[in-house]
Image (cartoon, rainbow, N blue to C red; front, side, top):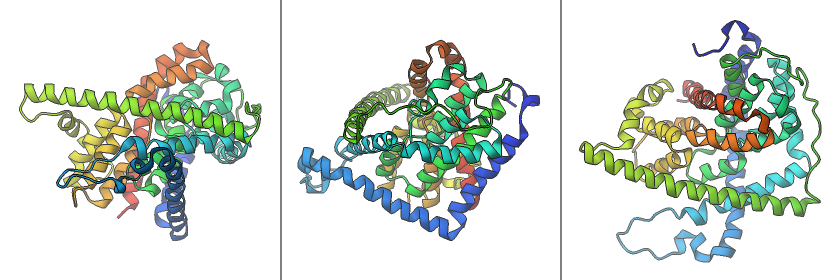
Length: 394
């Protein structure tokens, strides 16, 4: 219904995109050997996160181990975000930067992109960027195809933006798992978002031009800006620090705004809150992805929080709910993780304008024009991932 030119849609792209998305879901959720592999990967990821705890304990001491802190009897224990959730960002950022320096990340990305280019008929540049989004953030992934961004067609540029909204970065992946999100759900939805964001973008804005990298993943190789692995790790740690401070600042500000709006709404109408407004507005979406009827309004409030505020806030709210036994069913928690894992929120439009706009300043007006549309497609992609998972999860 929202397609800019339905007659120009390449239905091969749509068909293979849906097939790949469903196949990935079936493999992970229904094929025992693949599911066991992802369960094993879950253990690896959790252990991987724990490596950063060693560094955090050296710097923060007992503050990095909340169990060591004597709590006042009867007082509610609060998750110490700064000392438990932020250190992994530094470690993972440095780790992925080292992988990028040694071109390991690029090889994995090209392998994934080659499959989608062959099956879906998309351009190499846009597909490489989409594949890179599994590991890199919405402003870092386009760097893989940096030389081509200024000359991309509007459809390719739209894919770049929508895919960034539908994915998360490797650093954020471990943060969400640290919040208590199901690791298998987070890993699966990140991979499913590749074909999903690509075919949804091509449905919404079909290709009308001739991409420079049509049908091939051969692109210019960007030389690593780092001298060696040590330089790459140091630079990655610095970038991770900026990201961690940005996450902390956003949470402080946005949670404060939520508290202020709740106070205003409560003063106007008794017991009215932002969460309640979201639970009404997003209930249809929550119902359609297959959430248990008793949990529809709860997950709807999380979806609204993710879109209007950010996914960090939504995940932290869900983490608080898990402290209450049987607040929601395990299935609802897993599907919520599928639906929340993505950067699709209003703040991301500005982030992309700044990040991708710095790569191609001459395309800034196109980025501004496509921003809200990309947000819509990115948000729908995460809901579709959850809906498909909902079909196969008991």
